[in-house]
Image (tube, rainbow, N blue to C red; front, side, top):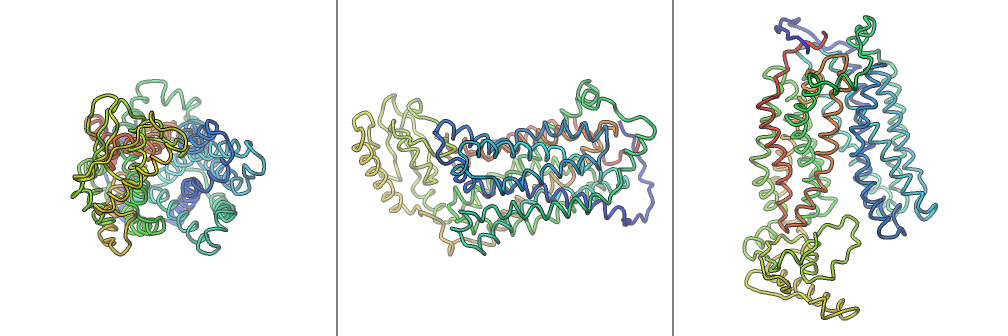
Length: 556
């Protein structure tokens, strides 16, 4: 383990030209990789229409889940593959390889033939390219963070690495701007037909610039010294995880820091976006603008908290951010609801919706590709309509076999019984039931969508900015902490795996998991229990087992 330093470093250390180039090159390259990675998420609806049309229901279901999950699922494997390479060969050359792979995969998506052109080969190739993207990203972050940290003076490591921490948000921000700009310039119809390819093709220019800048850099001095002395690890994976001495720190890093950081990151940026658009019925363009403004305000705080962690420590800032998230997520999202769609908030308070049914008679209301009609049980008919209309409801238990009823305030509406109506008659009965529900909801004040004139924009931005600030608290210092936890000879490998398990699995699957929880219960806030639970776990494990690292000398 690294030794500590006494703080007696040069008092007036200035950032040198070399250090500026290291930070700039590492940050720009990582922004580019995040830009590539998030393009798919922003364009998922259009890409699904291009690559999954015409596939039978079962195959389409498998491909839709695979394409969504592939990039997240393989990130830990990329961390192992490229982490090992980085500890054996070097930091610089490894993240040049990961950047090249990411650029190749992203550009190829832009020229990939659609399902209409080549059939089932199209979605297969799309999933394969997402796998390449996930593997590349799994190797990129650890390399960039390690490279910058090993160039930084001990008393400024949090500050230097915090520039790397801005890159995920900046990558999302850049992808958002390019997509909005392209849509605006060519129009929505052209964008859906062919314009969606433009952001992917533009990445080739970004790749060229980033590779050129990184090629000017030298290898990390810490790694170079270790290699010259012959002390580098010959088997970094087994050394990092094959013995308890090192392996325990990977586990502590995952559960005591990264898992909480990951769910706060995805809640504050992705789930907040999803919640505004899908739950609060704010239109997509307005949602994108509100999120973009909050990101612009909050992003400098990554650097602030990185700087602060050099003075008071990494651990306390990260755990404080997790604790604040656990305590404030429910009130923050309730406040977001009241500010973004006040009519909906008033209606939910004045005329709450309930579904009276036996829970054993219901299916799970989770349909990732929208193919299930949910029309074979009265419970499903009622819940499916409410879920698609983003209506929050509570379930009231009834005896087994009872026909579902929906209450809106004091009014009760009975769902059709699928056992008594079939074919066209069932469809007509469901349509009539839905019409009756719509009328009752409208009479109770439930809006079909958020009224832009009624949105309290300053308050929405304030809440979104608060959520981003929590992200900056947990994410700003995390790179420095992870670098400092592990010795130089296995650092790339050892820090990359817990980071990508946390962010790829705990965080990456958060939107899907939270949505499934909402769909299963009918409560639009229920999905918040997932990040809150992970944050509580991280605070407990972190307080008990995570060491403070900010005074460690990593040059040993």
